[in-house]
Length: 270
Image (cartoon, rainbow, N blue to C red):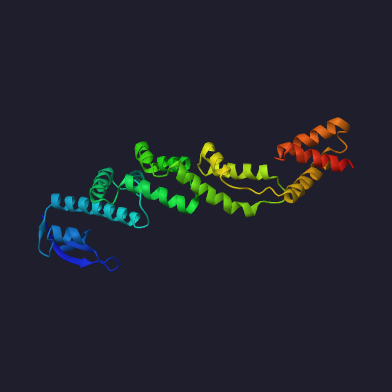
């Protein structure tokens, strides 16, 4: 049986206390505890503590440290249950403490995968133009249940998706270079939207809702630029009919309509 000789508040953390025990004729540091545990167990100078109580105090304090670590992790943003579990395991906390802390956080409403999924989707829609396919992939990686994700994505309907895509497409129009065809530009935008997590069908429907002015001057400048580059590569290698067919083929691949290609070749022959 040991006796508490003194209790001192820590200098760097005013919510924690160092407990010293008398063992024989000496006073030794025994452990540090959180203020909540100090009050709960009524730890005061002169109190006798047996070994079982000491072990219990140490265990409860370790759990309290795990809880405080979790609360601090939540202070930056919402977390999924899986994220929290991974974080605490990375901090090498005991598994039984991790399980108990996660259970408490769930009961207190600090952890909630349904709310987390909704908040995550809203945030990524606003900041990164994320589509539903990408959002689902990211939430699955964070350990959120598939059914929970689908329920959260229900509010992100195809109509809402198309509205967001149309707004985004209109902002991209000013970025079109006069060196590329309108078709190639649209394909580039479509590919970008695919990587953002939107389906090909929704993208195609949204593209139909946006008026891309295909100005003849701009399209002509683009085919002249691309055509002259291709000609330099083909000259000396091909002649006659084969030269013309290869020129047409490569310009068509770059998205130029056949009537513009024919005009370009015709004017080049004059």
